[in-house]
Image (cartoon, rainbow, N blue to C red):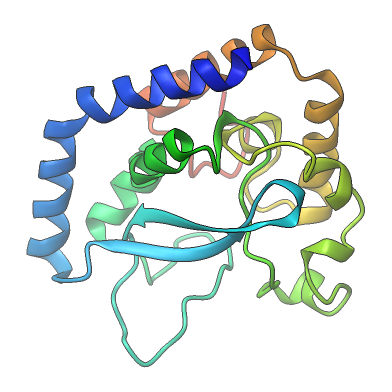
Length: 200
């Protein structure tokens, strides 16, 4: 209950405080690559429930090609403003509404698509429900930040990241959440979210 109250208050504060920044981001996306402004995708939430997440679009819009959830270094699909948004995690700002609604939390395992586009694991698992640790990590709401988002290498496999998520579920408490939020702000200020090596 305390975690939920914290999420509601902090998400409301974030929506209000960052309102001017939203305007600048919207204008920047429009000027560089036009519409759409947002990217919407189905993600797996608590207890395997599918939720719709909204992010600022960071990839070039190609109407006849699907968006593949593949992490690659120097991705040519990413726009110039998208590089900045991803490095600072500002593309995630619209998910404050997911937190306010109760679909997500500030801290928790990353909300992922059900299907696996990455060939490394796509050949091994049908979808993320088959990856070891999925059941445990699904006991809590997905979050904007968490142990795996901060400490796991960006290009680590889902199987590797799920180990961090399970550790978070087992150790979850308010003080850990506050520590991870503080570290996340530090990474954002340094624009280090896209770093392949240690983000801290």
